[in-house]
Length: 290
Image (cartoon, rainbow, N blue to C red; front, top):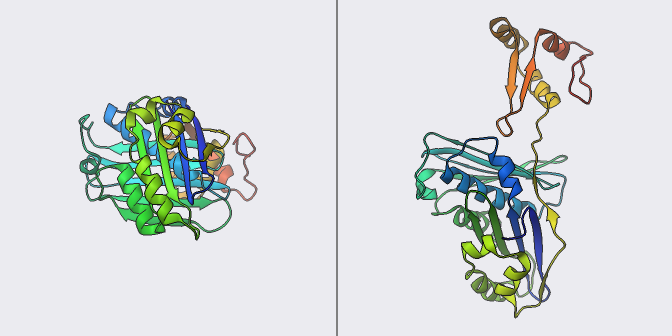
């Protein structure tokens, strides 16, 4: 397959076009192991993970990129995110298990695609486009056409166990971009899903562009890693009304904060909540309140 759990950018020496290819295997396994997703959900969520990997390859800041699709069909939410360290996680929310041959557009009726750039320092950016294409890759191509005015070609594939993605895009610079794009995009359009899943990156590059002067950058590792912690859970509780928290404590004896991505469970008792709202209430590196 495309080199598993790696992402590699493609450099065209004489063309105003950039490319990137990503493969995910253990990353998918680790993400899916936390949930009992039906096959079609695994397939679509794998494509989301591949897509957010491709999109994050152009990040120029410390932070994260979040790709979200939501609609009024059987699938209510798909969300995948990737940090500048190539840490990935994803989640799906749906009503009933969809049929294995369900079309992406049917599962997310009246939907929208939301792309969020969230730097650790600086302003948050968000772009939104309607989900009007039949596939996730088609929706992403429409997003770049509408929001970035950049001709883009996206290929995504997932068999439920492994996922892969391939993207070509015109460089946002003066030059021969339009002419180059016409040529390279025609070659890229010949790529088949089974090739994307089965061929290693060197073979894939030769298969598509053996007559071009192009090469692969050094690979970067991709991995599943959740960013939740007891400390972050405590910080989210601190944003709530103390009276509501004390009422919950009276009813339940403790407050549970569960991570939807990795299923980690964090529990807070009355002592924790009191420390949280005291003037000198702090948490140490392990997340224990003092």
